[in-house]
Amino acid sequence: MKKLALGAVMMLAMAAQAQSDAIARFFSKYQNDESFSMVNVSGKMFSMMADIDGDNPEDKALFSAISKIKGLKILTKTQTRNSRDLYKEALALMPTSDFEVLMTIRDKDKDMQFFTKESRGKISELVMVVAGNEEFVLMTLFGEIDLKEMSRIGKTVNIDGLNNLEKIKDKDKKKY
Image (cartoon, rainbow, N blue to C red; front, side, top):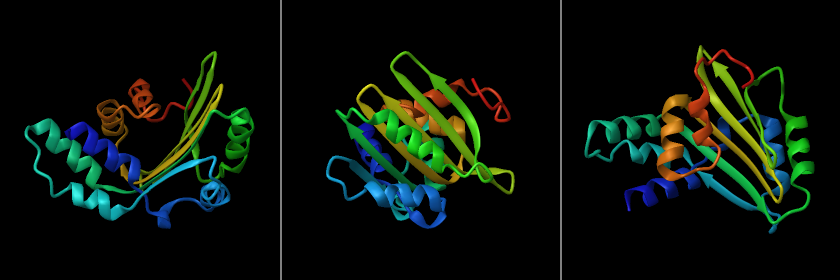
């Protein structure tokens, strides 16, 4: 039940104030298109997580990391034949002056890229863009982000893509 509740929180959170304009425009373009699913979780939802007492030190660390997140926005489209076009469109909008490629994964049936935006030496935004054979996902997470904690959260609530963050050994590496 705890995993389900945490999953709902992770899948519902978002606050648009800190995300980049290009990403916001992409979301705005498709958020009312009924062929897409959109999840938007505010920073308030994440701050409420800070008030939950964990049963053990691992839970407490998890809730502490979640409480630093200011928002989460996810846009998905499944059973689509244009996932690669959406992927290319989203990547073309990524402001390379603000974001740096953190990790690129190319598999036989899925492409995935992670981008980060740093502010004062800390990651302030994480963007994930995924295209599969019939699936497209764009996720933006912003606030004070600890990649190791986000990987653990991704595993805990089974968010496809976030669990790949565990492959990052050195935050300064660009491609994997």
